[in-house]
Every structure is written in C-alpha cells, then in structure tokens.
Length: 284
Image (cartoon, rainbow, N blue to C red):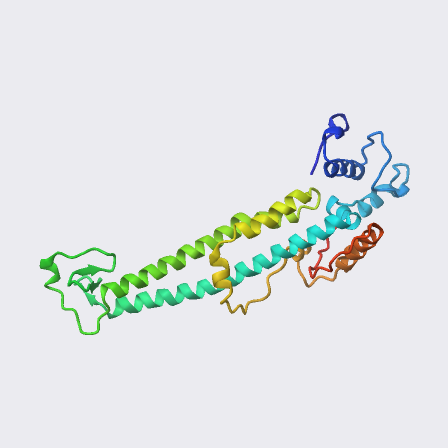
C-alpha cells in the first residue's frame, strides 16, 4: 500500500494510477490533505459524527474495488488476466496429475527390470549389453574377470533396455521440475499480485503478468495437461482464493462489478465482454 504522508506526496511526478492510490488511502485513513475528497463522499465519515468510526469501517473501499467499480477498461483487463491465470493454473494441475502417474509407472518399470535381471552376490542387479559387457544398475562396467562369473539367464533385460528406461524416467523428473518451477516462480507470484486489494497491479503490470504466463510456460505443461485425466476436486480460481471457502454465503459481487463496469462503459461507448470468472468477496 502507498504510505506517503501529505508532506511527501509529490503528486505531480506520479502517474494518475499512483495519485488515485495515494488519495484513496488518505481518505480511508481520514488524513486531511487540503483537497476535496474524491472517493469516500458520504458525510457520515465526518469526525464530528458519533458513528463515524463504525461507518468509516463499513464504507472503507480498497483500491482494487474502487478500480473494478469505476474504471471499466481496468476491470475488463483485470478479469481477462485473472481468467488467463486461472486457466494456466488448471493446465499446470492437469500436467502435474498426469506426470505424477507417469513417474509412478516408470518407477514400477525400472523395479521390474531390476527384479528380472541377473544378480551379484550382494543382490545388486546387473545387465548385459549388446557387446557382451556387464553393467551394474548404477552404470558401472564390471571387469572382464568379474563379468565371466555372472550367469545371465535367458530373457533377462539387457543393459540397453534398462538404460533407455532410466533415460525416460530422468526426462519425466526434469519435466516435473520445470512444471513445478513455472508454478512456483510465475503463477504463484502472479496470483499473489492479483490478490493485493490495497495496491492492485497497474495496467502495465497486468500486461506483464499475461505475457509471463504465455512466454514462460514450459512445453511440458501443455504436453502433459493435454493427456491428463483430472478427477480431483476443481482448483479454486484466483478470485475464489481471495474469497476463501467457496461454501460461504456471499453477495454476488461478480454481477455487482460487471454491472458497474458495464454502466460506466456504456457511457463511454465501450462494449465489454462478459467474463466467466467468479469475483470474490473482498472483505471491504
């Protein structure tokens, strides 16, 4: 949240977005900056009113709510990016579900190959390559003398077969790391930024969030999410996480924000799309 004092506002050097943030925060805090109030216009907030503190608490408006209710273009952009962020999270959830199953299958495949392989005296599995060399499961080549002591049963898996299974397993692990890194370093910070009620992202930040969602998404996300069979409960959207438990009975702020935005847009001749995003209770 912007915390500048009246003495250090320096509004002339700031963008309109920053000026609005500063003025709204001062009005919420009841700070007299020598200018007419622009956001909280109810005179019930007059300090001389005995119920002013209670009403001030009830009427305090966060910057995010103010922008969504009063800036149609910002609201449109915010909901577009929030929906894109939710869809990216769904793709990640699907990819992680699918790749986790694949890794489990790969683990079993490797274990089956080890079980069917020839064994050393200590029980370690060994595999014979096409050139007659003998390798341990860790990739160590046995000396010719030690190799001659190993009895390789018919039908035992070869070193090439086991090595290929290991490589497939390593690819799965790397892909999962890439997906988890994308979720941790791109999606989670973006979700936190979108949920900042007092210092919401600017329009430029929304553009950057959207760009990062696309350009930083690893190919493995779409590769695995396309094949995912997700049976778990639906993931909460960014907006629903802001709200908290979806079972709570809350006002339909989604409709409230859209109606406010549409009314403002109509006066400016702007046609807004109707997003399919649930808007949270913002606890104003």
